[in-house]
Length: 135
Image (cartoon, rainbow, N blue to C red; front, side):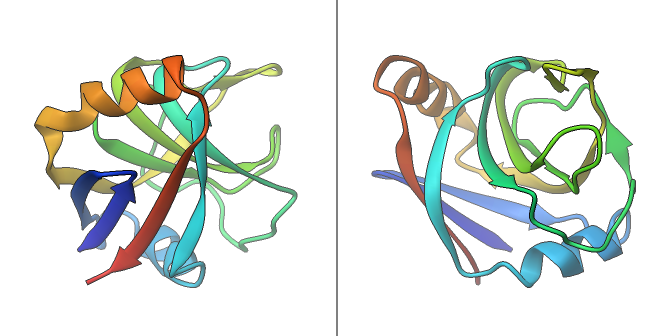
């Protein structure tokens, strides 16, 4: 289980180990993670953490362009930079290069009712501190 903290908002996410084992393993190597989450520029109602040219050693796995709110995507780079996408509403994952498919590796199961609050904060208040740990 991942624990995600954005300011005073808390979320719990189930790791999708059966559907995306390589992605889960690659993401675990980044933990614990402290960063800032910002409004996605191209993807609709989603926040993201850019990782730049970080090499994570995986390819597409359980990939989707249309995650539901709370379905976390890890994009391992390629057409665009490596990133984590945190959808809080309707989303079509994309970059300035066009539509992307990210690896669905975790699903928010605790705190779903606060996803709209996350969206409001990143949209109207800007970058928010985020901490991600495994419990």
